[in-house]
Image (cartoon, rainbow, N blue to C red):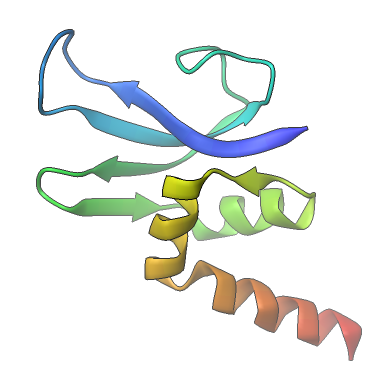
Length: 91
């Protein structure tokens, strides 16, 4: 099973960490090898960069976002786009 989750980046032991949003196998550890990098999140400066087509691809394939990633994607409006694409495929 694939999950969309945060992968910590930046310097060791630093309070101001930045994270990559990655598609990764459930059995991998947090800093393990990811399938694909799909975004970037900086909680200190409140910046996000999302590769929307890649995220939608993994969501269509059944990837489950973690709680924090779900909140980030919801704030960016990814799930409204996902629902719209599913409605277009049904019709």
